Image 1: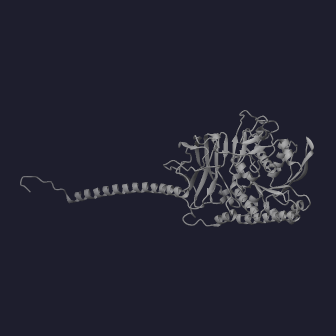
Image 2: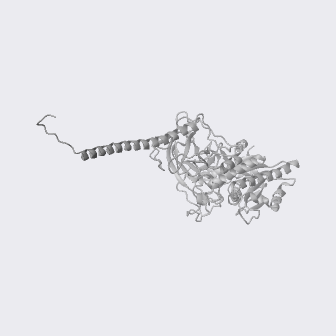
Image 3: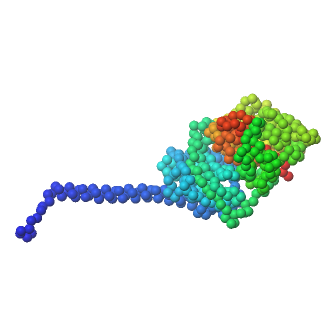
Length: 557
């Protein structure tokens, strides 16, 4: 150090304080960066998992979710449906899923890229081509946004536009993921809403008393614009149904609209004559008088379309036949509507046990015998026994008595019924009850064949999708869809049924409220009175469509 230069010495304590503060600052910056990177990496990891899961699960699809070489979207009952469902229902969820519940979903290709879990994605513009089947994976998420690894959730799905209403099929992979399939015909371009509702979690809708487990949470509402590409037009055909079209156990149909009267009002007799009676169908979606459905232009079609019978063609079809109905009280409504609306035979009410020879009021040479037996209880004044009614000896013998003579019914139309949803305490017991019922009817038909008589054709008419408030109750859509599948599975196992009419699919697009139903019936007689939803009158055309579908089957050659 040179003499004459002044040097300032920093005190030792102050120098230590500066070094300590600097170290804390550096450490804070490093920790902050690490935390930021950690959060970002966690988010990216979650997205990466979902992306890899999507690619692995639907390897047969393109990256846009479009299925190649499409035909009509298809639904079917899986082989060994009863045993497979029973195995899934009884299987423990296992770690790490046993303590997690579905709170949200992620749909690759439909949800926004930032996966912000908004319940409404209307700001996300989606455009799809008509004709093609667009298949996507729904990945369920728990409260922390972590993908779940067990199935059993029940989703209600609805795809609706101005002239189209359908239920996109959902498939449960059993590992927390589900597929959903969308399809619109090229004749119906335009804007649609796709709604996805979580009604029940992990088979909880199958419980004996499921109401307290109902979620009924709308998880997504997407706005989708369906448009044609040049190759779309005219490439998706639909033809009128014949007998072979009824062998499918599950349908994936839709309601389409081909006329509309926005000024239509209810008549004093409770009917909606919105279009003139002879308003024509638009082929290929139906054939006949669309106005006779009193649906303000709506008509149902599935993998094939239906003829709409008038009284003349209806009587020509049913003349000299014997129809035997076995099921819940929805059959009473359908029989009354068939007589009143199609055959022009006026009748007030149809009781739970009904046996009448009906004569054509315009042609006394034509007649049809209709027999109906209630299966909600062996005592017709009571309820909530369902298939267990067959455990009553007197009831069984009563049914057998109609199949022991020289003449037996030409057609049996049967269903399980809503009463089963209330009676059976669990899935395992219903599987046994369905098996016992199928074995009973197999014995009845075998007895007919042993006498060298012609056995009747047997049609299973699936139980309705309960509507509005009833979606949460013991006969909720989740349970009734499962019970439909189980009974069909057992009836097939014993060789009982020949054909299926999927009334569950027909009613599903209209089951979200009570405009077309009182919760459990879709065919109540028209009346200009206050309905369950508070409005005057109600819609009854869904059951009129069922009558037409049944006629198409019975009259097909």
